[in-house]
Image (tube, rainbow, N blue to C red):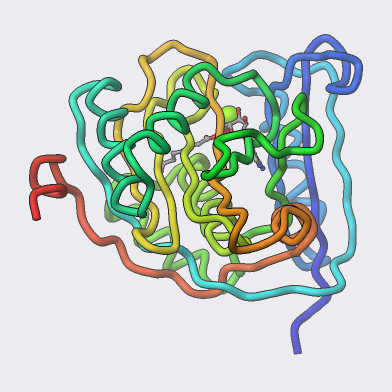
Length: 269
Ligand code: WAQ
Ligand code: MG
């Protein structure tokens, strides 16, 4: 039997709440047993008050007991080393083609993220029509309700420490990507951070795993985003969004780190 678990969510903005047009500063989520609630809330609060995007003046923290949970493994990790973001973006096209997209589909998806709107959620793009499908285009789709099982913090930390990538960005993005890759109809995800100092992004999929690319934007840029690539012949939009936004999942198994490669070695076969 598993213990009762609670979902704790934090979102912070500057210049008023998100609903009133405040600028988004930070957001995070944890799934924890009852005895960890207080500690978790204080960590999230501290994080919202000390973010590199600025100091928040609106902070919302919510707490909810979870009824139904699915357990899944994380995606295996690969790191591709590139010299700059232009090389990184070429890599994105290549990764998306390996997943099965055409050059034109891959190119359009990348362009959508480069020119995309500054929203708190992800764009959800149909790979056939290449149109955005989110019900609310000013918000995007939010993947929520995922976290690491407390029992795998230790192996997770040692795996990420060994590769020198044990930071919040990686732990959270890997959990999010592992959930998103399993959503009905999702065949790939593309992401880079809105944090101005964090240039590493990724392409993730059930087929190829979590592929980190060391530069996907120039340093100093505070625009980031996500695109979820949806195949409308595989699932309905409703099934997909329901999985992303409502299904609570916990990752209780860690897949390995597959290696760190210069791009010419990774794509040569
Ligand atoms: N659901 C959907 N989209 C989201 C979510 C979410 N829960 N959270 C953020 N986004 C969107 C939103 O547009 C953000 O601007 C954008 O993604 C980037 O979010 O392996 O830190 O939290 O080294 O800034 C990836 C690489 C780091 C990690 C990604 O994203 C690694 C990161 P951020
Ligand atoms: Mg961020």
